[in-house]
Image 1: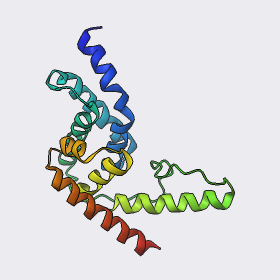
Image 2: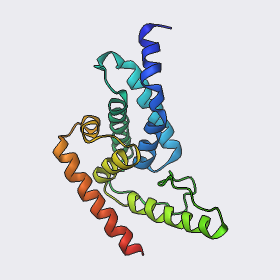
Image 3: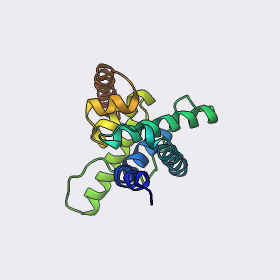
Length: 173
């Protein structure tokens, strides 16, 4: 194994879950998300020489995002997508432990479905910053690097995304 390959393994492979999570939130399809991540990793490996060091996660997530947008263009699906409210495999949104009674499990499932639907209903530009900040826990600077936009734009999109999410959740209740 070459030095570049082992460095790639050490720095980029640990970001696989985050890459899949972002792809899944953006394309809304498990199988397509897997294909997107595979393509993104191939591109990341091919262009790893251009990686300037630091945290590989924002760099990789920027590639994942670009591959998602390329897929949108290829599929002529740049318009908003339908939300699948029955998606039992939706990414979990809270890490809090609750008593596991049938009632609480049902409430958790309904709450998760509402939040997932609300996030999925956001325009892509707002959805991606919200997922990167709140689910992937990237800093504003890392999001700005991943999306290749100014930090101020990240902050304003995130604020707008949170407001839209709040309004959508309030309406659903």
